[in-house]
Length: 94
Image (cartoon, rainbow, N blue to C red; front, side, top):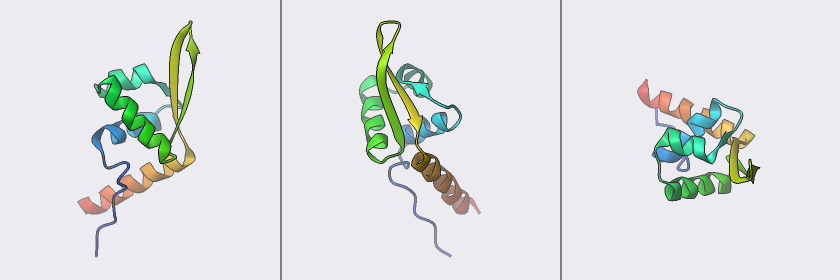
């Protein structure tokens, strides 16, 4: 029996952390993700862009109390990719 391939988009520590956080909430803003992951602003921004380009995350830019606010939500494709990734990892552990 072979191992299931791991999604290269999710097989990155920070991107996996972001998706893991977003799977538990409806949406999260950039600051929340920054605080929870401990990433730098630049790195988090780059990884969110990669998740967006893969179709896994939707990013909405707006304002909150007159300050720029970036909100992130998982797409259906992102949820499915995460579920498949977790299933593949479980296969490695059996």
